[in-house]
Image (cartoon, rainbow, N blue to C red):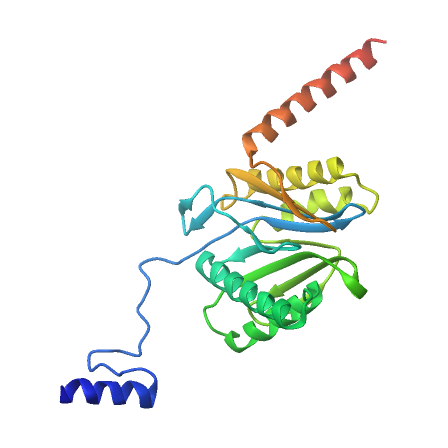
Length: 255
């Protein structure tokens, strides 16, 4: 009983108990924990569109072919995640909790910019650590700040506002499609097609990205999720487009 009492007092005083066999040295990893992904989001006249692949990788291994990289935060806000899966899932839950508490206290939702600022302030103390979180917050604000919002937040505290973001190892390939295709006047069908093609191009070149594509659309009525699509279908659509293009060129040449 005396030992338990001493242990309880030690925990109360220091917050943790220093076991004699504990070591402050970090344990070396058996192999480098490399990871990659392809996520993107952009603004257009129909709201905010977010897309991501579903391959979760660990060095040269595919840890999960059907991971969830776009995480709903509340009814009008979703976040694309890139980095360490566990870190992203944890901070998504923390941000969701804080936003829910804000809504209960003030009777209204915090704006997308406010959510990005809050997440940035929470992540900044971990700058220089192994925490790896890169999130793009896609939301629609109500009240005085009514309208779409798009912000990028990184684990070093970086916070950027923009109209188009692509994050992850496949982002350079995705930008090659987004830069030439994204414009304000897109319809929902056109925006969805461009987002799907951008993810497909990235997965074709980037070994860390692949499998399926998730697409979320955020509007004044909240977010909606399209049915998850296999990227092989986009491959077959691309082959059909090329076949039709060759036939059209052949017909033009014969005329």
